[in-house]
Image (tube, rainbow, N blue to C red; front, top):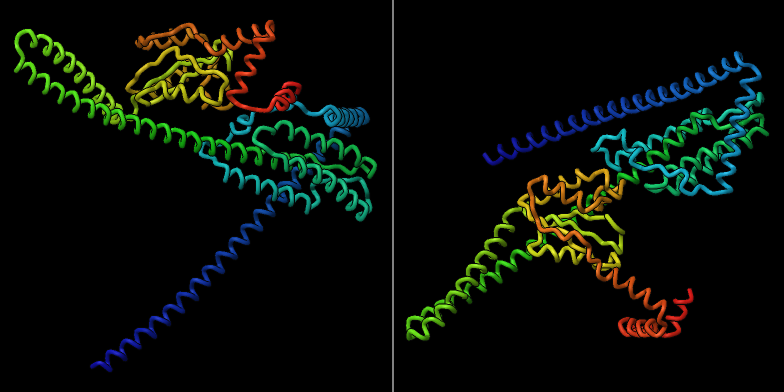
Length: 468
């Protein structure tokens, strides 16, 4: 019986091996067929792309030829004048520099992109744009020339392509998320100058189609950089929010523990006071009853504090919306409208005024809300046009009067306390001290001496810094 089982097992193993080999062969066949189809589709796509490029070049050439036939010498003269004008402009840009003339807001590049379009997809589009440029170089549609002799024509075309591509590759190596306009103009200027110099080689010139292909590379490179930066900013914001939530959570827990401890202490004191009242005579009783009443009021306050901390910990949206200013750092009528879930919201304000700005913030209003993020968002929308940073909406500073902010908040049925005048204490004191030191050398020396005690440096180092 055991022998029969072994034989049957061997037979099943052999059958399984045969089936496995058949499956492998079938899989290989499917893979070969898939690869063959993929190659066929890729070749077909390349052929369509080449055909489209060739057709576009032909259409442009035919249009130019027709225009020349109709207008004759006038068309040639106009074309030449336009080319020279472009060349002069390119030379001026190179001599004078680009400055801020060609700054283009990067978000204008993103208008046509879907919201879910990420930097990886933009990277794929950049790859395709580069493939198109390479293909145009290979199939000869990247440049043109009037030489009849094939060898001379090829050398002239290769010369202008190498010259143009060298300039463009150097320009593209400097791509950042915020320099699209300048780099775009640099590529256009390179196109003008290379084509101008190419006239010495029977009008060897880069085609407009090839210029556009390389400009597409720039566009997608900048878009990829911008989207990558946006994703990093979003991650930074999320991490900041998590840190803020964690601080708030720790604060709530600490407040609850402190309140519970205070409650326990007060309950013991109340018990002791009640015992004293029971034992006391009429004269002492009045004194102990007053003490008992005070303890009961303190206990009630501690219970309310504990309850508030528990409530805020449980409600993930409750918090305070703050209106703050910093005249010394940002000037008049500039307000930050932000939100914090901290139990002690002023701790957050103090953090904002730490090392990043020269002066502390003034608090104009602190508005508690069950939906603080919603209230903050509503106020941001109301003052959207007054937003100071038109590129990064996460910067919550607005150029608006405090009266306008107050009016809008009161329209919502909210009546928080307001401090309309900014104290700007350190800023105003600094201005006054500056003026006084201009008139009083001794005062200035005393101030310098005091500062050096706070942050010691050598006299020589200080004098060297002052002279610079």
